[in-house]
Length: 159
Image (cartoon, rainbow, N blue to C red):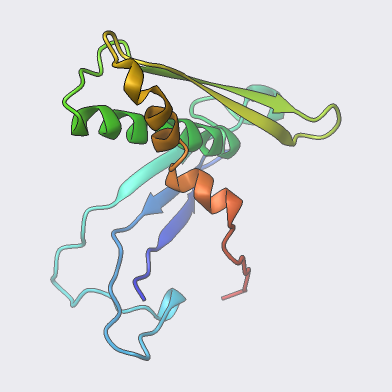
C-alpha cells in the first residue's frame, strides 16, 4: 500500500501550514507506516513537496493572510469538479473557453455545517447539446466528493 505523508507546521499566530510530500511506495509486505516510514538515504535530495498555507480571519485571532482549512476543503471540492469538467472537454477536443463552475454552499441554521452544495456548471461556448448530461456525470466523478460519500477511517495517535 502506498503512503502519502503530510507534515503540519506551526508558523506563529494562527498560521498553520501543510507540507504535502510525494507518495512513498512500500518497501515490502511489512513496510512501516507513520513516523517509522522509510526516509531517504543521507545525501539524497528530498523529493519535491508542496506547501499549503492556512490562516484564520482576524476576527478569529489570525491575520487573514491565507484561506482557512475549511475554505480549502470547500475549494478542493470545487476545483476537483473543475478538473473533471476540463478533462471531459479536452478529451472531446471541445474548447474550454467560457467553461465555468460556481458552487453554492448552504449552511445549517445553527452550527457551521454545510447541508447542501450545488455545483452550477456553465458549459463552454459552442458546447454540443448531446454532451450536456455527460458533462454533469463527469463532474459528479470528482474524487474529493467520492471521499466524502465513502469516508476513510480516521485515527489520531500520540507519537
